Length: 110
Image (cartoon, rainbow, N blue to C red; front, side, top):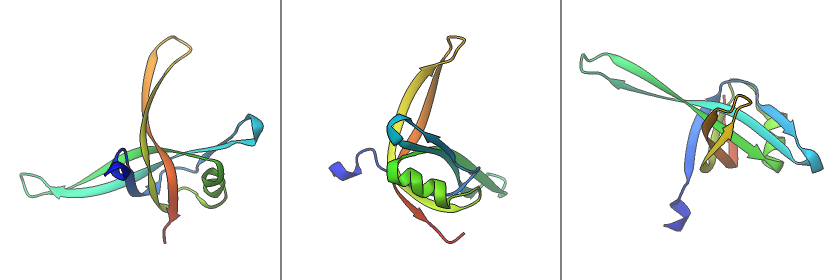
């Protein structure tokens, strides 16, 4: 069961082209978001579409694959883990972000 701890698997579509950051020392970071959609019927029997957005970060070789092959609208399968972090804005406000650190990426047909 240890393999299941903090494990996330998603299939979704890229909302925008990935943002690529080249860091000192040659490290590469890719940031992008994917949308996952689900639908259900409400109490009135109407179909309701629910779309969730997920922030994804990929490092190293995975970031290179993202840079070379992924664009807005592409469908991908992501496996990774949830990461929560905080930072302070220039105005001194504390902000919180939740993202998925991508360990594996699979490009799908779309």
